[in-house]
Length: 211
Ligand code: 13P
Image 1 (spheres, helix red, strand yellow):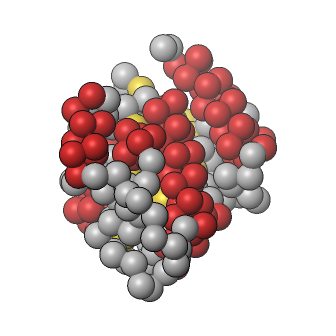
Image 2 (cartoon, rainbow, N blue to C red):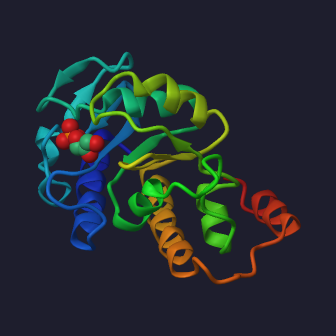
């Protein structure tokens, strides 16, 4: 896909996320890898009203080249790309259910959401660790995200929200949507005793739908 088409796809996927309430106000940011660098949503922009021509263009070293000033979370995205060579896009949201899970104290910080459904496992993977709280825009979170992302396609920033990688922009958006749905199911089923997917079922999903 050429850069113009990638810009248009990013704008339309972001608008779709915003329209369905996956982000509000100016929350969230999205990036995608290009042959010669990255496109990123500008800082303080609304995912609902992006302008394809004004997206931030970054070089391969993540330095700002053109367009509006990039998200203050550039290093959050860089951590994902550098930890996961297959990663071609990153979506960060403050989506409500995933963020609610990120605030819970009595969950396993290594993997707070158990394998409830196949699509969560297929899109997000075997685990999604929680990274401790850092102020938004605090570059100190980069090594923590990098370390967590070495073993996970998505991480959950405590009291903040998810950071999700994908091979493509569409993959990353689908994974962010599945994560939010899984978080909703997890919260709906708290206090119940749900049947989880077995370890064998999880292995089978990951072998069949290699992520
Ligand atoms: P930016 O507007 O700088 O992208 O920040 C939004 C956000 O989601 C912070 O975590």
